[in-house]
Amino acid sequence: MNMNASPEGEDLEEKKLLGSGGYAFAKLTEQEEIKASLGVPQIFLGNIGRLNEARFTRYYCNNCRKEHTGCPVITYENPNERLGENVTLIEEGEYRCKTCNNLIALYRKFNNT
Ligand SMILES: [Zn+2]
Image 1: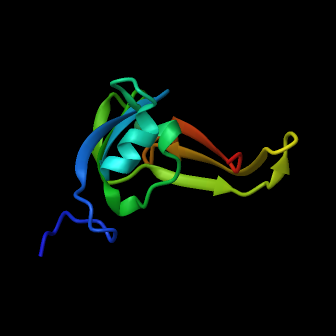
Image 2 (image 1 turned 60 degrees about the horizontal axis):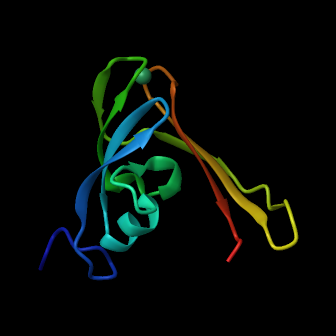
Image 3 (image 1 turned 90 degrees about the vertical axis):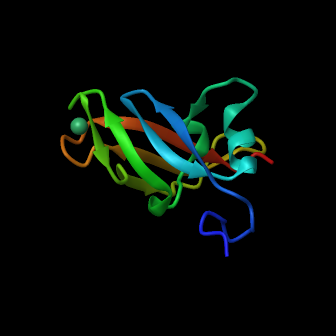
């Protein structure tokens, strides 16, 4: 059995995910990577949204100026706020440094599909 396989059977690959206050390394499926990169070489944590904490291996905090092992602290809420005709903000979340509480990245998830 492949230990790196996701429940969907896809291989996971460790990628660098950029945030405004640092970056993180997490294992992504190819689909997640394609969805988040939007055609540019960099992958932004804000485009990934909320990932399972177990996917993260380490992250770098610009405020601490060092790498931490594990996952940043993820907090989120589900405002279900209607922003337009067919757009509802369903989830808003933050990744913060577990040591100094620095904001690593923000994400917003819409149901505009
Ligand atoms: Zn920090």
